[in-house]
Image (cartoon, rainbow, N blue to C red):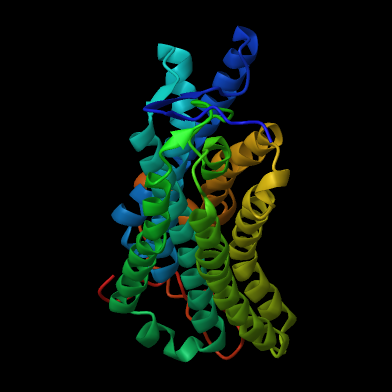
Length: 334
């Protein structure tokens, strides 16, 4: 077995996608377009939810949380490509790199938990419509959101301490476009047994599987209730209400599985960069494009704020007929 070159590293060099200027410029333009689209779409959602009281409902409250998470994840992962091209600085200190890994993974864990909370919101709206406003009040929504953020940061904290114990690296060049846990752990010559064990136990079974299981259980009851609706129009409206949430859940889990749920020894950093780019760039765009900007309530709110239509209060409510459009009515206290 050949001996490894072990050294104490104080900074990393982010290699990115290519050393050629033309390719760097094309990647810069693509990432800039994606980042501005993500930033503009999610900021629009945040402003509309804050300014329009018609959107002061649990669904849009959780969507606002998703927008904050998407903006944060995009900024953490994509800003280094933009700064490296503009300023020519592709270095980052080891401590700052590890902190970025911790924040990024925490944000992903929080997003999974928020999506499971949104699944519970869909469950109450469809399965218990008459009790919806009593169950999903402002206090419960604030409590669920607070627990999502708190648990997301706490469950990744021990892993952060494990990363801080990685003191030596074979090289200080990260074959990636941002600080991600897999390329950093491939560089280290320290013992990574604790970190890998923590990723397998807490990362997979707690941070990923638990939100997935909660979302899955919610949709078992949702689908059962939808199938019992006699009206075909009611069933279509119920499925339409859940389709956007399911699309976001599927895309996020699919990207995470393709990026992280592989043996570390078989991970190719070159291919991993493209999975990471999809996860960091495409997924955050899904929130405004799939979930919100195609929603008639959001469109109405945009028109109201642009003073194109008079302000109207929607009186849609959930009834025995299976009409599930109850979330257009503001909840008291939200």
